[in-house]
Length: 401
Image (cartoon, rainbow, N blue to C red; front, side, top):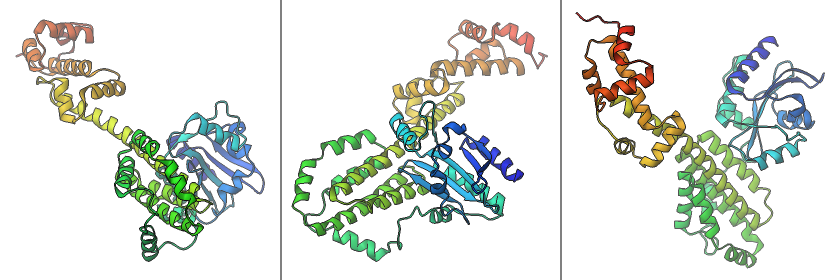
């Protein structure tokens, strides 16, 4: 037990994912990190333990809540429950956080839920499982044991093909092929605002009028169409950079919800919410990746060209980004603008040359493309608090022969 607690503490310190180690039989908590007891959903909501740890006896399970919140659970050889979470798959707003707190009787003041991906949660529970059992477990094994796939037998190729054929009958498709491609592009590109405009511009009244004229047996055809749309959206999200495990799990969750829809309007609403969910997640992923990569590319360009003349236009052209946007993101990420960053790095390079070479101050100034020796001396003094001559006298490593 001590080793288990030691590992749980290390996992929490590395991931900041809330974790608990609890013996339900004796009602004793051996370890808890992430929440104070008064704000922990598992202590505020007595039924949450049973719900999350269900079917977690032999292998770890991952549980979803409302398509946003994730838990991971495992019951060890002593019969004690180990639970990670809650964490959110995407960054949630205040309203979603408040709804969660109310659902589990948690005081909302100061209550927070950390944003972590499905892969991060899987990594935590799989590392724990290996430590306790010496056995490896794959993402697919965890997902299968978690029942995150739709209930019932897997849909085989023939059945899926039948669904697609059913949906090609005249009058069933609500969206044209071009419209469908446009929707998938919004998801792939993470263009959430574009998707909202597309949805808003669509003639919902025409759909509702058409639904009223349909026979009840057509409901199944709408279900089939929804299945195809969820599948396409899942693939579009993966193509846009979403982790495949997270994408397929989110798609499967919407397939489960599809089974609870009682009318065509509900199916349509589910499809719209599904597309919004995928698009928002891809948008977050692209935003994080692009800003970091563009800034890093710009930083490397500057460092490689300290002894050459270049402008903001040159950097923007090299990283293939609008110069105003690049300048703004660079400042936000690095804390200084591109011009100031370049000047700092040139002065730092000059300091190294003053220490480790016997090149003249004029040569160093020209090499690092300062407009003049006097300007170089002024900037250097602003940065190091002394002139280049004084710096060389104090820090010199190589002596002049």
